[in-house]
Image 1 (cartoon, rainbow, N blue to C red):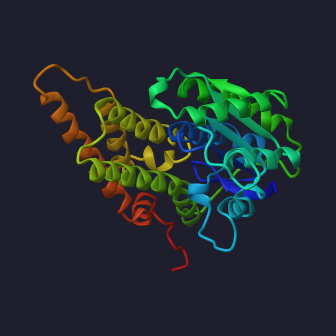
Image 2: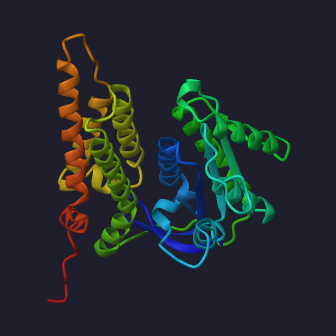
Length: 330
């Protein structure tokens, strides 16, 4: 249900807005695409939320679901996050996912639930080139069959790479909000929020970032422990690029912290962005493995910094970045 609420922009101004829950649905092979979609949603908020009186809330099962017993996993997810959401954005790469009791996959079941309840469902399919030896042909065949059915039931989108996907999502979000009948979407003069409210709002906005960094850290350590060696060069560079793009995409919503020269958290995240970008752009040479070994050391250093940030008390970071208002009662 679209919910009237009070929101806070990056400068600490309060404004009334209708919150729209945007469910992000996808199989497991499009994590970078999902990060780009979420970053684009945050960017839309920073550009349009106050003026239009609408805030888009990205919902992902990795961040918004909780453990629960007594039913099939997809049934639980349907109850917790699918049915309460207002809009769905689904993204497919070259996998469809695992079948559920009633559909080809969890993602397709979520799309179907939106369609039968007349809620907006935006679906994108990848057009990127892929080496056939790198994919599961059975998954691809099932995905192509699903795409064929959906083409006969509506209008689907496609993308060639992450930048192309980001452009499509940004444009489609504008059209989506324009087409929604939103009650209580009003535009009002902003009011200055208290420092306490700013701290709580910024901490809430930063929580998805902390969770994403935690997932990156766990994924990297898992690869190191299972293989005894980090990802191959190109895959590791893509991994670093994914971290950089996610951090860069969050600039709009957390600019109070990231762009504050006195913020220790902002300083550390900016340094992390720079390190991730440098690793993503590194080149390997025929030098007996020296450049590769240096890259491995740099990637390990990057991920150690990620792990350090995840383990830091971000609430204390924010309190020291945004001073509390003085008490005038004395």
